[in-house]
Figure 1 (tube, rainbow, N blue to C red):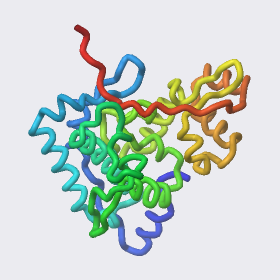
Figure 2 (cartoon, one colour; figure 1 turned 180 degrees about the vertical axis):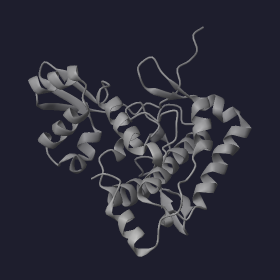
Figure 3 (tube, rainbow, N blue to C red; figure 1 turned 30 degrees about the vertical axis):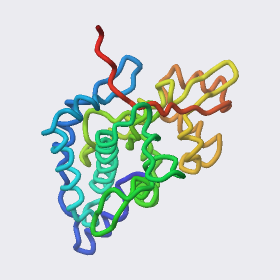
Figure 4 (cartoon, rainbow, N blue to C red; figure 1 turned 135 degrees about the vertical axis):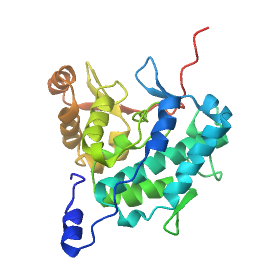
Length: 257
């Protein structure tokens, strides 16, 4: 399902055209400053430098506060998608800056039974307190039904799709989501073909229903975005043999001595 939906057309006919596009340049400026592609192809975030920069920590907080004040229900679909994805990523970065986990985001546990920080309410939008889980599952996945959602959200982990150096913007959303899908699938943490078959990210196991709810559906999704070499390797061994995920923090690489 593509993001240019029937909702927008209905709004035009009803005379309730959605609010104009949102500007996420403030987040892009911060990401450009602190996100650095690592030698392993993962986008690393220089959390330590960002944490020490008081003005840029405040700039991130100001951006989150501005999004919280946005009447998101008046936005068109593409703007709404970009809004929620950027809010999710900004709040995740803020969480790492505030809590300073040493190894993994899963160290941040609001209570002893928590798997990680995703269930705690962290923002208020249009009067509703929301967790990161609410944004991902109850809003983005429920409203859009687009598997590329999983390439838009970054959980501060090496195994996650890249955070990118630019915020999501409605004007380039379709092309950027496709590019993010290709970047992840063609990286070993997305899909690797071994002599025995495919080893793929646990994202395709956790959210199997978003990718056709079958091994065949997952493989078809991978083939849609795979480069030629990977496509040929998958077609030669089209069987899923295992799933992997690296929860290590997606920190920037240490500078060479």
